[in-house]
Length: 73
Image 1 (cartoon, one colour):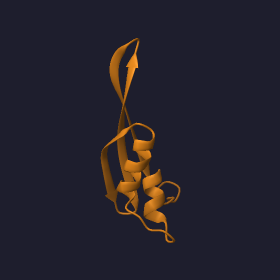
Image 2 (cartoon, rainbow, N blue to C red):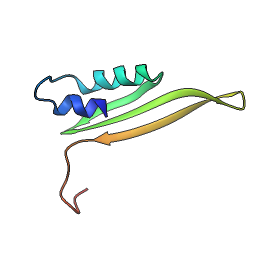
Image 3 (tube, helix red, strand yellow):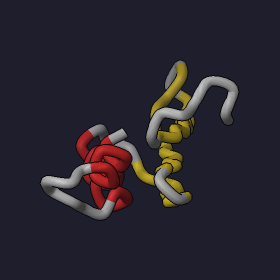
Image 4 (tube, one colour):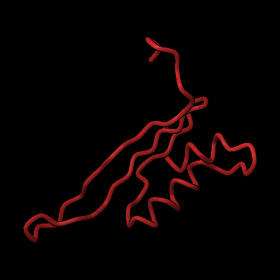
């Protein structure tokens, strides 16, 4: 969500994808993709982990942007 905060910040505008990369890196994750769609930011991340000693990769995605009216997708 750091990327969305950067997109919406009037006081300190920043590149939301650069912020997403910084936040992901601080959490030992990698940004798989970062898209700016109008006022929304869509970020997908991946992190390496292991399950019972077997290396795995976990992925997550988030979309953030301004609030929408009820019933609007």
